[in-house]
Amino acid sequence: MFKSLSSKSFLNLGLVLGASLMVSACTSQYATRGNLPDPDRLAELIPGEVHARDVAEILGTPTAFSTFGGESWYYISERVEYYAFLEPKIIDRKVVQVKFSKNGMVERVEERENQQGRDVAFVERETPTAGNEITFFEQIFGNLGRFNKDK
Image (cartoon, one colour):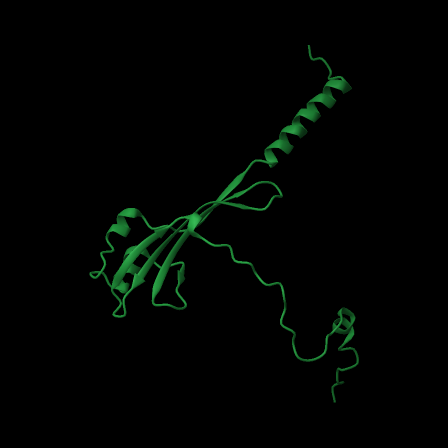
């Protein structure tokens, strides 16, 4: 009734299963980061009529705040593709900037796409610290013999 599997057909079955597992492991994975406000909510931000308190209630907490050049809030969202061991690739990035006047009222709302962004080159230097450079073994064995016995 049942035929026993020959070693050749068993090997072929194993190869097919192994190949399908390897191929499925290399499929792209996508991740969405951030929270982009709904366009209907953005339409509620009328310049000169809406205060910063109201913006926080309408859109929620911003992703980032401006550090100089006036008060601005940024809502950032991006979609990233991960493929096996390769460098992640940003597929889509959107930034909504809400700029406020000095009295806290919305001055303007701007939407920016991925093409308007700039890559920042990070500096690899390290700031030297004052004092001695401690080696790995000095860290491990540095406290040997420094303990006082109970008196």
